[in-house]
Image (spheres, helix red, strand yellow):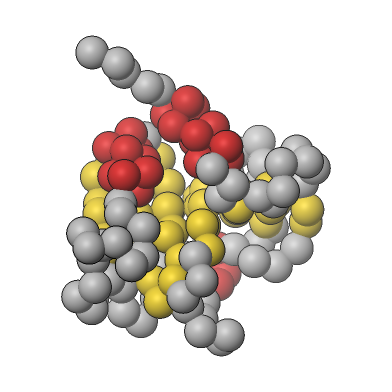
Amino acid sequence: MNHLSIDELLEELRRRRWVVYIFGPREEPEVCAAVFQWETCADVLVLRGEERASAYRVTTLPDTDVFQPALVSWQYHSTADWTLRAVLTIPPPGDVAAPIQLLQPHPDCAIPMDARQPVTILPANGTGKADQGDP
């Protein structure tokens, strides 16, 4: 069986051009998140530890806070490795199998504003340079 580690799965997110957010001190982050922005929605991954992770798809408008979704069209909550696998296999928007039902997000979909600073942003451009700032 092909078993991928959490680090390998996170690297796959970066290879697929997800933006990674590290909330808290970079050496010991409180929460790590990753976002892939589609044209009309975003897929979001929130890692709170090896045993607690969430992923969801949220419709995006200009004022959407992807880390505080009002509604989601898909969500998954499990261990980090299973949640990473789930978010990497969700069908793209517009696909016949893509989720479209609107759901109330689980509380673990939200990252409170006071938990978002400091933040290190690893952009999707593949430069490997980190930006500091607001998500």
